[in-house]
Image (cartoon, rainbow, N blue to C red; front, side):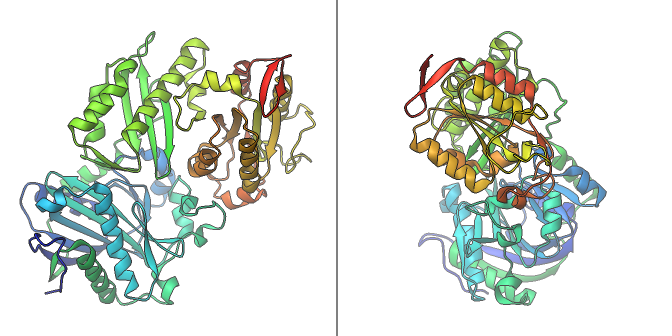
Length: 544
């Protein structure tokens, strides 16, 4: 029997079987977790803490879009399993050099009403406490990571099913960064506050921290002690090898089907997409509208946030389908309140903002004849304001252009400015901007972007337009948000540093591949910026 600290003075001890199922396929481990969670939700089975490792696996969060997060072709060609966790959170690459654990328990009365964010914090604190036993200075990085000197070493994820709780965790013993970057479409520089530095510098491992990987039993014992300290159950060791329940071929097939759901094919209908970035999560939505009115014919949400109840988004989608957009915000608030929904990483206001962004893009298709493809290439950045692309463009005085859209041979590629030679779309952007009397700046590296945005903020520039790839916007959201200036950003096509795994070179300004600006989209955007105006003072303008 392991010593314990209870959750509270009124908590009843919880007996948890500790098992180690060793190395298995990612699909088998996912099926075992799902089966145990479903049993506990039905009041059957036992509480269990299962340690395990996975063969190479791409693990995606319950609410994420499959093809927006993973390079599926790479996974297929390299025999990498793809699984969808019952828990929230972001996509992971798992391999045998990572120790996983799954804690499945029936929830006590006290824990049932514990906020989702606090349960996540306790789970991360349990790992941190276990690692501290080896002299590792681990600490919690909210909402669900564990760090050592700013480098990620572990993550935790949660799922609730009725009165059952699943806590999943992954601790890095070693790490295969090369394969990780091949598998995950979303770049990993989100682990760094600045976005600078190599991926290896944003991750750390137990081996890197103490010079070697301790014995398995030592690691497990330390983690168990950390869980007792932070989460409070009595733990009873049970020497078991193999799965905690028999997993049938049917369950494995079901797991594969579960992984493949929530895939957004770009050719699947005429969907308008929105993208809302918060400090801790990304929220995506896509919708089809009735032809001549802002009526939601179909809507879907996706996020890397943690959300309970587990079926929250599917229920919300049903409520919103067929509803006029004018009623959608109230419907979200009512549904969230009625279902006692909890979220970590986003709020109901963010969901409303995603709907407002959809409505704004729908108006562009109706009033200005933008195509669905064109509005989906727009990434509005309107902090604390209702999305209104037309109004923002009416105030825009600055255009920011990425250096990577200039040809590699161009003498201006790594310099601010353009000769407007007519041999690339950047020249068109400079000409369009000049015709609108806009300040056009080529961003030459990440630090230059931050400095430029700070300068625009100091000069109280009212709004700007810019170009960057979608991945850069998602992961470098902090720079745009902290500037606090309304902006309309356009996605770039062609080669980008994230697909080529060269984001470090791009941030430093030494990326050599060529991105492409969408000239037609740029021209449509420019048409919404009033012509022939003269700048007055700090970015304001008057008719010339």
